[in-house]
Length: 221
Ligand SMILES: [Zn+2]
Image (cartoon, rainbow, N blue to C red; front, side, top):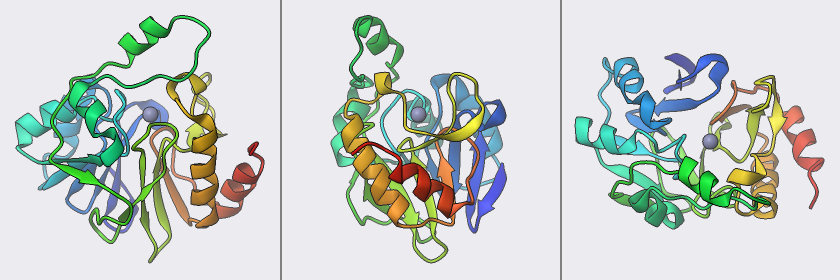
């Protein structure tokens, strides 16, 4: 567990920050894949966690959420338009030429009942608010703290290549993204905030606002 901003700790769940969760004040943001439950519980054992919030309801972010709720007895918060997927554990993939059934099966995770549905402007913890940033999922949320311009962007941007794990900015893979054009709109919105620190679902933190702005402006409209 590494401090990446005031009251914000990164919990890398795989090597090279391939899959991340974050502890924001007393709220755990995201939970990795189902196999990450023990690691998360170990990394946060010395902390009191009061709630568990999601950036979006996908298997690599909500995978351990049901077991965390059962083990810690904490409420789960999710973007309003991802609530049904969190219940069912069945997310909608992106457009693929073939293999859609296999992809849907790969994207399954243990569904869990949300306790609170978050919307634009709702408070998270430690000064962060929710921003509705749909596209990668219908109810995708980013979390933003204006005071020090810290952004938890979820999967609106990746800061690694999923093919090579090399660090660098990308949009999320199309096969996991039902509405790529809407995600690009969300990406431009987030870049316009000029965050000083960006914390990703996949990849290490980025402390280079100009790099994010250049990347966002290079995206097709
Ligand atoms: Zn992800």
